[in-house]
Image 1 (tube, rainbow, N blue to C red):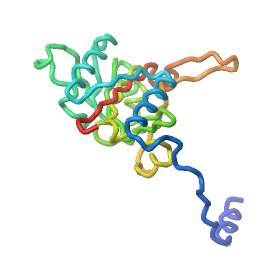
Image 2: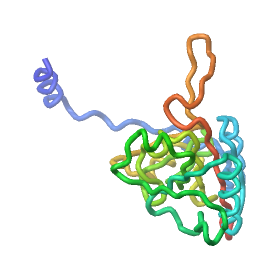
Image 3: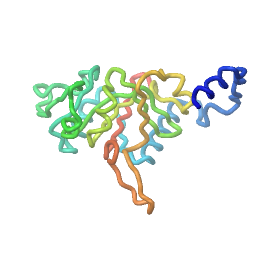
Image 4: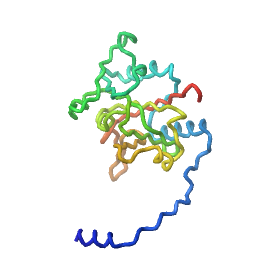
Length: 211
């Protein structure tokens, strides 16, 4: 049967080009307004949103980890070292665990928190997209630990819409689209969080110097 389908498809004329007359964005063309919209939609998706500048980022991350009571934090390869200074600099003793291919799901489940960057953030939907690039690590490190802190550089990494985000992404990379903490609901619409991903998602919007 599949062979017949392949033969029929191969003999068919090329499909016409799809019309794309829709608006690529419904948000104002204003970087500051996009960041505010992203903040609002992230919060609407039940993410905890914080704002800071590059100088304030290390102290904020350490505070969030301390408030969480995290004793271990998973750090992906390529995460800027200045984001989480060493314990001998901060005098805060949190065990840093590096992203390893050999880490088992049980080992990752024992990690208290994970800190990553992202590839792009979509303002209209409050969505973060990770593509496994530097500072993001393997997909599983943001799916197994219960607490994920994601750093977004604004306005550089913020786009208005999903179509705009797609132009920045490589579809061959392992894309993870995150809109709030992991959640599901049963037939009675009782919401349960942390079923297939982090129970708590915190997003740090880092306003760059020229923003």
